[in-house]
Length: 254
Image (cartoon, rainbow, N blue to C red):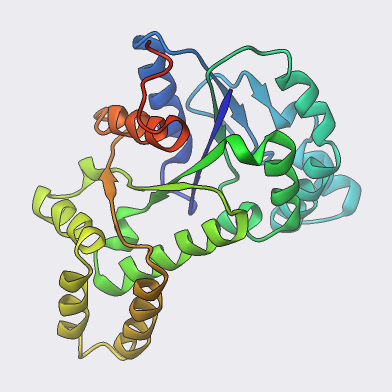
């Protein structure tokens, strides 16, 4: 059993991607289950096999602690870690190849609270990876792209598990735009040049410093364009997972 955490900023398409990838795995005869870790989700784009909302209700947390939605999300995240044994007990009853994990809509709740490390460790850190979805609206400009890469790097730094970088919702972009964004990740020199071209932007100096920091840490490499709506890149997600978990061997299909 291998865990794939779908992580990204609010609106990056995590839930719809979990649903689309689950359907792709089903269609290809690969067994997987879905796990929702967002107690504040109003609705999901898939049927969750395991749902944290069965144990934690955001509305009840708001009432009990007299909190607004944001404060209740923080408390709910900590309650999730405190009740992780209930979730792992249910998960242990499943025999499957992959667990597709939908994380909270607010990135900071999953990436920057110690409760998330507790959850990842409880579910098996050594058999886990992250699928980080970058929002195309944020990535359209060089500075926005660098900001997105900083966030993804911080997530990996915090959780210390392998990551694949995905450009989400590429069906909403012109082909030349998606190709340019992906090229920025694969060829940092191109990104460097485009950052220099933004010299009228007062944030450019900061962007250049962040770019240099990212380059020094070696985060650039491969990024894949994906779309849940158009079913683009789903096989590439599977291939990347195989490479991370099994060195490229198609263990499930074999």
